[in-house]
Image (cartoon, rainbow, N blue to C red):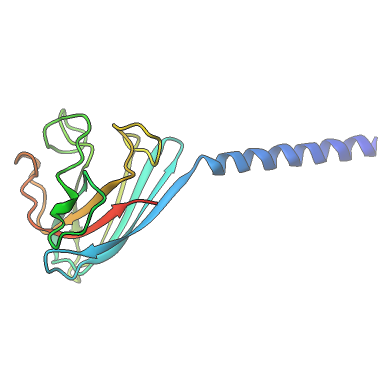
Length: 175
């Protein structure tokens, strides 16, 4: 009887171990660093984590002017230009008008606004099931895109940019 219980215990441990290993394989993450652009001193990091078909962006920036700023995903993972224009326009794989996330029309890259504190520091947390990391779906895959922080807030109206001003920090979303 003791041998049967021991065998059952070992099988249970192996099954549980395999299941937790499988669930870890389904999570993906990318950590990226921002480069200062447009003669700014903005720096920071961003972490994209995908779990259970939802991507969470956590970005931490410093060196910003206190107040509201916009953050968007742009078309290209190219931050080579001094003003980050090399990253192209907002990522818009579904060919919608620029707008506020969740409204009738918005770009998949229209993340929105965030507020920098009196010291110029900000943390942005954004979650969506409308993105994926490396899934290959051109309407959802953020790999190969650019993440841009802007000097001003997005007005959610002006086409196609939201009148968010200069690109003060840029990072390529690449592995």
